[in-house]
Amino acid sequence: MRCPYCQEFESRVVDSRSGDDGSFIRRRRECNACKRRFTTYERLEERGLLVIKKGGNREAFDRKKILDGIARACEKRPVSMEEMENMVASIERELRDLYEHEVSSKAIGEMVMDRLQRRDEVAYVRFASVYRQFTDLNSFIKTIDQLKQR
Image (tube, rainbow, N blue to C red; front, top):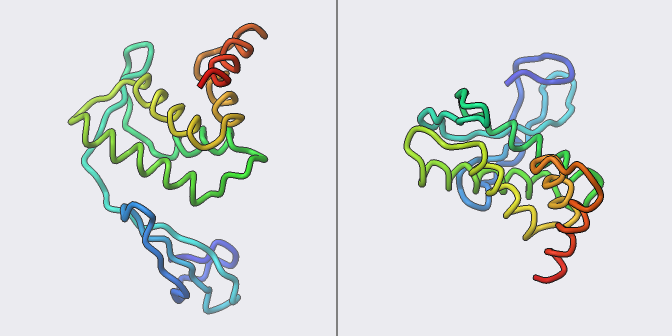
């Protein structure tokens, strides 16, 4: 694994941990040259899954897009990167269990919102505002009122 700081190829594993759900391994590494530490993730490569977008076009499933969306929603919130990774792993596992070849982007968005709502309501509202394309203040108020009723 190449060091992201000095580009050295040689590093040693300092610590390895399995993710909460066992779907990935998190490794802390130390570069043999510059002695700085960095984290890598190892996961099983799964069969291809296509996402059907709103316009009908299809693209390969990309877990990084889900992680990026969750990370944006959780920015400056008390949600760790490990928790976000676990959310994505859970969503990906559920998708692969439920769908053999294709899944709609709507189904993915609903799964993300479900996880965020259970973890952090502010992150949920942030994600929902983009995902559901809120156009005015009333959309925000309606979503917040629904959260209060639960």
